[in-house]
Image: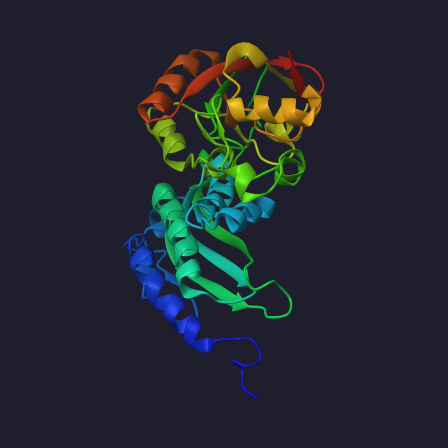
Amino acid sequence: MDYKKAGVDIEAGYRSVELMKEHVKKTMRPEVLGGIGGFSGAFSLEKVKEMKEPVLLSGTDGVGTKIKLAFILDKHDTVGIDCVAMCVNDVACAGGEPLFFLDYIACGKNIPEKIAEIVKGVAEGCLQAGAALIGGETAEHPDLMPVDEYDLAGFTVGVAERSEMITGENIRPGDVLVGIASSGVHSNGFSLVRKVFEMTAESLNTYYDELGTTLGEALLTPTRIYVKALKQVKEAGITIKGCSHITGGGFYENIPRMLPDGVRAVVEKDSYPVLPIFTLLQKKGDIAEQMMYNTYNMGLGMVLAVDAADADAAVKALQEAGEQAYIVGRCEAGEKGVTLC
């Protein structure tokens, strides 16, 4: 008996590392010390020392049951982007710059080519966020997971000048809400998605006119990464008073998280286009509208609160960064929460 016969292939692990190296190299920043293969990732804080009062920010998350679709379609090069996005968007929400990222892949069987495809997506997400992929782990779990399945999670560390952090504490009645378009369902609510649509290759490969693509392609569209767009708003001289990443819990849970007591957000549902995938999902699943807005992003991946005088400039800066942005509502005096009208 040996380790390979027990279900863990060390040689496959070595090959996975070799295959992913070319993708990881693309994400390197000058602060990264050493290469791939060490026991830890090293990142110099020399530049951070130049900041007046640096604050480290961290975020961790996974892709959730969205990866089930990747299994069915045997498409593994985008879920890594989702994993990065779920972490770095949270850090950016607080005004931080993601510095580095690490991933964790647990699999039933280490198939090097598949692992490399997953990490390719992780690296692409890191490139979009400007973060270095400085390490990770691939753990083979025979008898615990099916041989053709895996789970993916990760975490990021970022930094912000304390005086420039986005806390929401200065949001006041009269401030304007600016929404940034999502790319689709992103990485939340897939347990419900999987109950509404049949999870087979045939179903996911079905083309829908209203989507302009197959169902699987629409659902696997990776989560939008907003790091550079928020940075461009800041560089335009606009103060983002509050920022909400619309993830699990949709509008009702996430928008109030940026609000101070005594302020209520009002979102006008017809102020931006709801993506076709949500209309299809709601119709097919006979899902109540309130539940849709309490589960999904409904076409807005982030909502910002800015001074009314800065609203148009914020939209322009976001558009120049390549995002679709809309004025979607306002802040009013009232009980902390959100009203959709």
